[in-house]
Image 1 (spheres, rainbow, N blue to C red):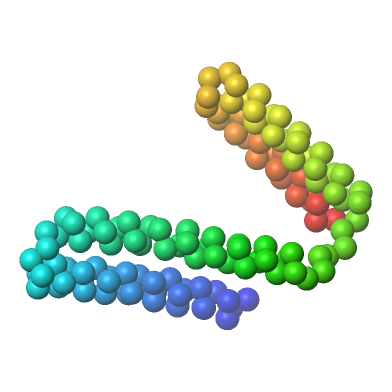
Image 2 (tube, rainbow, N blue to C red):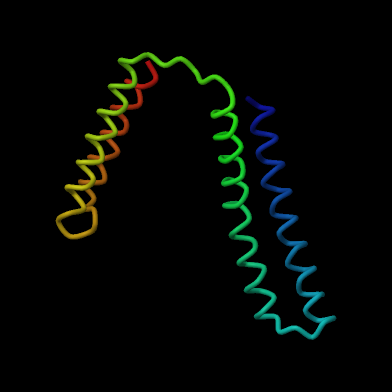
Length: 125
């Protein structure tokens, strides 16, 4: 547990340092090439915000591909019925709450969180 937290802290620190160095490097390139700093900033922000989504999409595609090529896990049928029923119930609950005025009130959010908290032990056990 301690090693995991240490690795997480080191990763966050390294990420902050790398982001800082990226901005410094981009500013230097902008100065050398006479590119407006606004243009460089927008490109870096766009690239920086798109990279995590790209990484997650690639990992998800690889996981999906391995799921198609390899044998899947054996899942108890009753667990599947509970999971699908719970997902449908929460979807109907959320849809009904959103149908009123396209937003959720605080109590509706608490209700959805409570439904989620009630479903997780069913699926885990």
